[in-house]
Length: 97
Image 1 (spheres, rainbow, N blue to C red):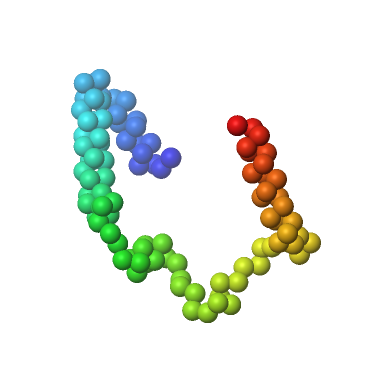
Image 2 (tube, rainbow, N blue to C red):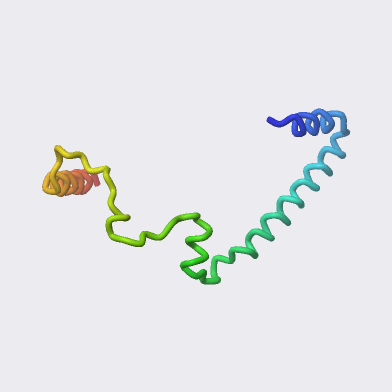
């Protein structure tokens, strides 16, 4: 908790209950206005370009196929082991339901 927030809470404790309610109302209104502005910036129903999505996520596009390479697959497991595991999990899930 920041010093500013601690100071504000200490000050709020000195207020009457009615003033505390007014403070809560004022903070709620500020938050509401902030979130309304954020919603207007990123309207769900307005399609975004792929460029703006990428820019918002701060990702980099792969320029080559080798740039998409991931080194996470355990060397001692084959693709067949993975497929067998998935098949087994699906079977267990069906039996559980």
